Length: 193
Image (tube, rainbow, N blue to C red; front, side, top):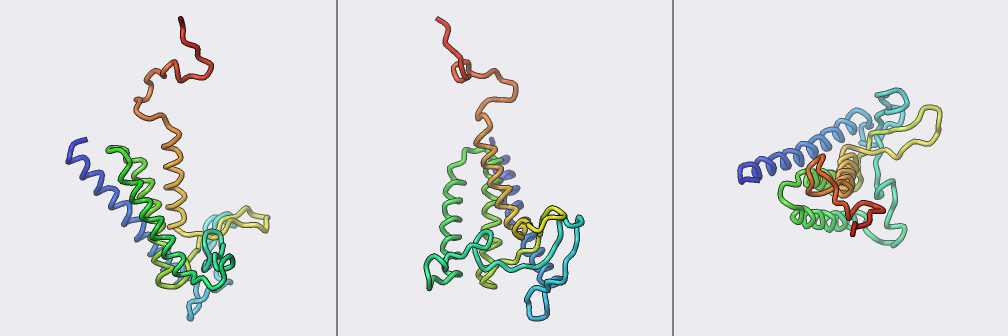
């Protein structure tokens, strides 16, 4: 990959990072404005059905971690905002380290890490501004009381980014599509003598 292509790829990843971060913050603002009461608390009677009961928008604040887990229940007296800020900083540092180790030209994995970073930054901004994360996407199966935990664009970015990394780790590396497989790596293959 020449220098011009590398800069184009970097620019594309930077646009991906900032576009998804901006989309996350904008949609959270819209959720707070349209589904919140004057004091900022959720109006639990305001629900926007996007696809019937399958997908709907409603405002929920998450003061805990993923799916509402709370570390302060494990360690009493722990300041949740400090915990999440430190945890996010360590995670962002680790992701930056991983990003630097990805081979040049592997833009699929770099895009996956970029999406995870965008999601981490998006939720960290909420934690630092509000001490909680704004969630508004509610998914469930009509007729069932159980629904998936409410989430946001940042959470979606993290999930999509992780899925991209998992897929990349499962795909063969370094061989073009249609190239013959190495006989020694096939199951039940025996070298011929």
